[in-house]
Length: 468
Image (cartoon, rainbow, N blue to C red; front, side):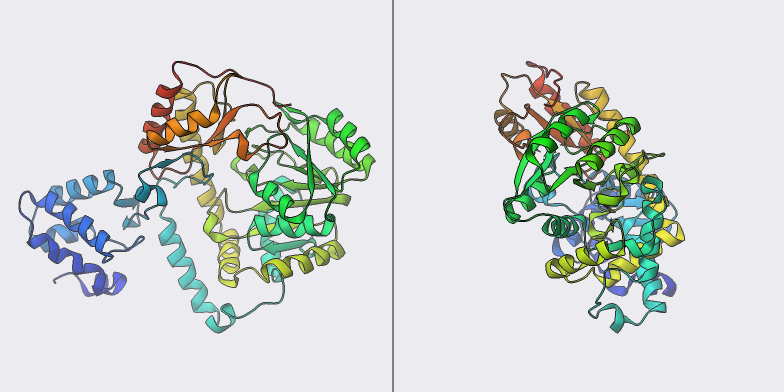
C-alpha cells in the first residue's frame, strides 16, 4: 500500500487491511467502500475506536475523487458505523447492546456522545502520556489507599463548584459512586435501620438498601424536591439512621431543589441529628451549579460526586467528601472491603483530565449535546418535565394509565423504557416513565424514538402530577 510510513505507524498495518475488500466490490466506488467497512467491522478487522485513513489519503490510494470518499464516509456515518471528530479524524463507532438487540435505549442514563470530540482519541492520548511518565508495573499493582494526595486534590477541585472548598484529607477516590454509596450506608446503618428517601428514587440506592437489610420509607416531595416539613415529621417519627437525597436533577423526576430549600433541609437534618447522604451525579451539568446541601450541613453529611454522568461511566471514578479525616478513614475501611481500590490507571486518567482542563472541555461538550437533546424532548413531548440541562426527563401518566402496558407497547416498537416501579419507595408512587436522552448514539435516533413514543401517547396525553 502506498500510504505514508508515518500514517502506517500511527494506526498500524493491520488497520489498513480492510481496504483490500474494496477491490472485490461491484457498483459505485462509494458504496463499495461502505460495504467494505461493514464487512471489516462485522469480521472484527476494524474495532471500535480504530482511526480510518484521512479522506484525501484514501482517495489517492484508490485513485478516485475526494468527493467519492467523502460520500462514502458520510453514508457510513449515517449508518452508525463511523463517528468524526473535528481536527482528530474519523473513527469506528462503538456499537451498543441496543444496536445488537434492535432497541433504542431510553432507559439507561448516560452522558450523550459529545459533538466534535472523540472520547477514544482523548483516552489514547492521555493513557499514552501517563505510560510515558509512570511505571506500568506500579500502575498495574495493588494500591492500599483511596486516592493519592494529588488525586484527592483533583477531586476537591472537581467538586468545588458544588461543594465549595474542602480539604483533600477529607476526600476519597472511589471506584464508582455505587461502591461508594454501599460503603457509606454500611457504616452509617445497621440491618433493620430506617433510611428516608423520596417516593421516587435511584434504583441503585434501593438495591443497596435491600442488600444491607435497611428499611426505606418515603418523605413527601414536590416540583422543588423533598419538602422540609415532611422530612422533619418523618425524622421525628421514625428516627432514621440516614436520609438519602439527590437534590440536583433528581433521578427520576429531574427536579432541582432551590438554594433556599437546601438551606432549610440542612437545618432540619442538623436539628434532628440525622446523617445526610447526598448523591450528586448531575450538578456539574449546570453552568453555575446550585450549592450542595452538604455545604450548609457539613458536620453530618457525606457527599458523593461521580464522573459517570458528566464525563463517562467507563471511568468508574467518584469522589466521596466526608466531614473530617477520621470519617474518611471509617468509610475507606468499608470501601476497601467492598472494592479494595480504584483502578490506578483510571484514577490517574481522571486526575490528568481535571488538571489539564480536558475534563472541563469534555464536560462543556456533554452539556451542549445534553441541552440539544433536551430541546428535542421539549418539542416532541412537551408534557415531559426537566430543566434544559437534564440528561433525563420525567413523563407523568394519567392515574388510569398502565405504565407497564406502555412499556410493552414501546418495546414492540423498538424502544426500551423504564417505569416508576423501578424507582418507587412504597406503593403510592405516581405513574410515569423516565426517559433517558443520552443513551442513543446519535441525535437523529433519539428524535425518531421520541416521535415514536409520542405517537403511542397521542390518544391519551399524560397529565402533570405532584410527587407525594
